[in-house]
Image 1 (cartoon, rainbow over the protein chains, first blue to last red):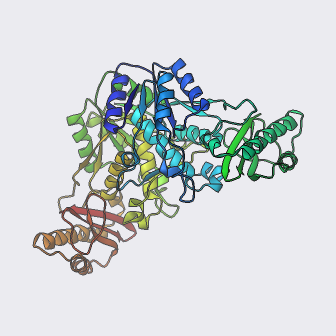
Image 2: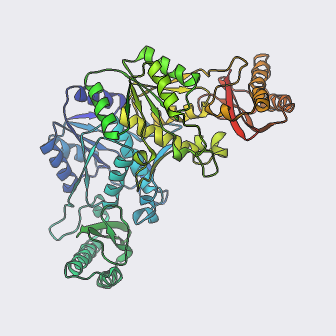
Image 3: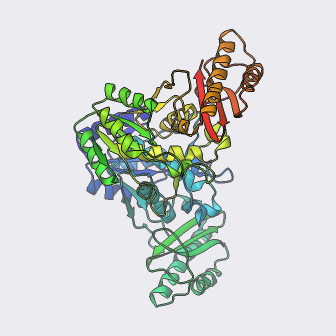
Length: 279
Length: 279
């Protein structure tokens, strides 16, 4: 596995790959890799001639009050994990390379930016869309892989691809969970043992919501209330939102939509976690 | 010359061209073509294997109070002009094709959007950057050609190319002028004979500004005042702005910068015109 840090070098490599007609699978990450990321890599390996992973903790998607500085960066460990998966290229640019002086062009998914995570994290999805577009332009992958855990992110990326006419197939890979059901996240390492136990409440309330819907409950407010009540036993959990949305555009309704996704975001202690289940 | 209206068809054509390694020159236009556009076409023809021109009056770059509806659309005439220049493909999508229901992803050059034309026309450069990026993604040209007359637009596009890591060379082609010096513009047809005479004041005041700078005047305020005074004899001209800026990033200073551009925007009667001279 070659580690590439310069824009010019990654462009040269991908240009050569395109000339030879090879398919490229690409997984953009912020590092701190876990089995969820590795599953994206395995999907890419199975379906593309060449697999490229990027590790870049993207400043543009953090607000000034968020955890950019303390976001975990176990680079050498990440590198070993990717080499073990036989990733072909690791793209590892630094912030000054990606955002040089004078940088000012941002991509905004206007409506999707204003709901759910976007409402709570202003500019987050502008940062996500901008960096992903830059990486797509540098690598021009055939396929790109995103985890279902960041559901709204995957909707944003698919919308961007459609709106900006990019010829890239977006593959959403199901969330990988710990044995007890907690969705894997690079932020789970911040949980103390007590918080780790209560964090499971997020997944369990999602399961309750899914069960209620599959049993025929249609009233969104009722289902949300039942889920919230269920969560209350977890005193370390502070809920941001529970929503039941259309999978394609994240619209909300009073009645559960046909293709629904149940989403949750909450602080567990000082760590903010998100999770979701598709119905 | 083939006229292409569907996204799928233009993508198929350009994909084939890329496979064969042909260079593509691309000129995005809003139609109502004049010799300024045709000069861009000729530059492209001289330097690329294939030349593609788009005609699309882009709703996203007009504000609700602007002249979208009355913007001239002499399509059959435009087509003849392009065929005569031996353009290979004319891409002519309709608004619903470019902006389908649910479209919401916009590209914003944040700082450049807030000065000069951007200050007066909010969202204009977001509209320009968005449509040009879409066209670039569909066509993936080797070279693209823009007129110097829309100077700020050319700076915005170059900034976007840099910021979003697009491998496209942007070529800025000098402004084509009528014999008396008026910059060609699709909006000139709106000028009545009296306005047409006074419109020349814009170019003449630019020439005065350039002369003053070349004579060694360094004080921006003095030069701007002299230019404004000169313009005052043209009673039908209502000035929006005169600015002397850095060519690269459009910054303004009290002292004339080394690589300067003098820009002017004014209404002549009800028609808004812009022009500029590089020093």
